[in-house]
Image (cartoon, rainbow over all chains, first blue to last red; front, side, top):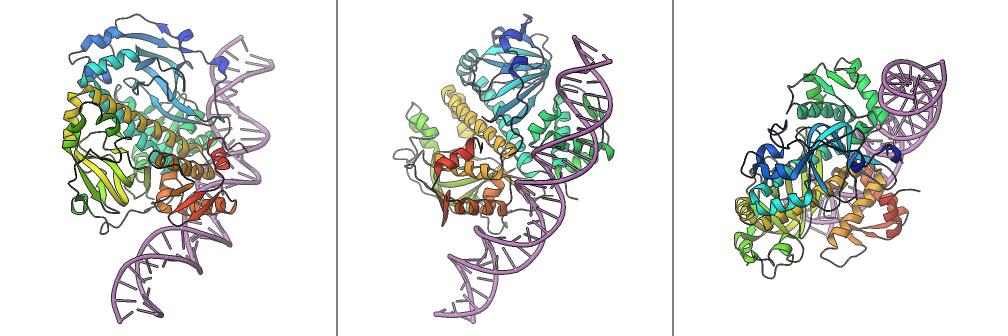
Length: 255
Length: 255
DNA sequence: CGTCCACTTGACAATCGTCAATAGCAGTGG
DNA sequence: CCACTGCTATTGACGATTGTCAAGTGGACG
């Protein structure tokens, strides 16, 4: 039918988290670069400050390593400190849907179930703050304020899942690409100064699986946008030239 | 691009909840037909039993009435008791994505924000158990056990959103339809005996907007499946004949 | 220098969207 | 009772978008 057997990494190259991850053993919270953004931003400051710090551990995952595997035991939760993590789901026949990309400040493993519902892979090396889900659960049951913050974070995730469903079901290719570039830029801007330069640590295939098209279509559309002076394709990313037009393509696409 | 201005109901026909909804004023929880399924099933039995009952009110919404409107004030949360509610999101240019269909036992308004992220419309007349979100919030802050159940419900919603993203991005039309019919059958079966007959209270356009295709494609594909003796199209629904083949189409599609 | 990948580009084909005509059905009103 | 209207659904013809297949480029790395 469509792309059968797209991009499942050869298992040989895919290291499991335990082999690959390197514990940094630094103190977790104080001086953490994402304290202002994610769960810690709203949490560490408020009361149970270093309780969560004592339960978590700063770690580094190398590129292509698997933080969570779909169907595998969901032992850990992660707070991304630097780098990009790709979240995906795979059909039995190999077709893959990329659900999203987690950047600094994003939290993984919110659902707190004992089985992972998705796969999380590091794109390039990634620093995380890792903790046991069981500890997270206990903490949540003790403090309903904490719990309600987890709830709120999940509400955000659900909302962006809904936006993504809209994108997948009802937008055309150029629109998809424009949305993708602009939203990626926006997300990264939570931590860095906003810039016309957008890093793309993922492959074209990853982008394709995120947008529900093929890698050829992604490549062609990016080329077309470059021809039209909307973007410039640079190594490992793009530079956005005509942001106005891109935003117009992304939101209305009313030609 | 695709279908511009699909199916936004003429506002004249769309009654607002306050005009249309009829309070039944029955005692909420005892004898409620969905006690065993949704939030109440795991809640009313356990401690805060009739606390939530006292805060909620049984109501009837007529067909086409709007329970929540995207961007509107999110005053209420709902527990669906009977009927079907369609959840959707609309782009500024009118394109619509149907996010899902809520049936008996499903809960609406989990996010507890003060603004609705989506629109909920009754397909045919619907009975709900309605409560103030503010009450829900208070209740949740008091009992972290309750809160964690809300959290778990939202985790389920997120998971099915992920499945739907997979469907929208990576499945072909026949596959989409087969998945749709089978999952609808499955969901309704939580409350009724499982049956080859599947009611379709929504229009073809609704199905199309749910699956990310056009209404013509839905119609054609259903006709084709009927020609192939997989289903029979009956008034307001279909009857599934060859469930094995349908399941094969839905999960692997490996011909 | 050669291999491996990711990416690009082209040619072609298939799916699915668009446009249009028609059927069926319910509700309305003469 | 029967047009008449409006809506939903079906079906066909056609075309555009996008997937498939294939070839080729360029960079990284051994």
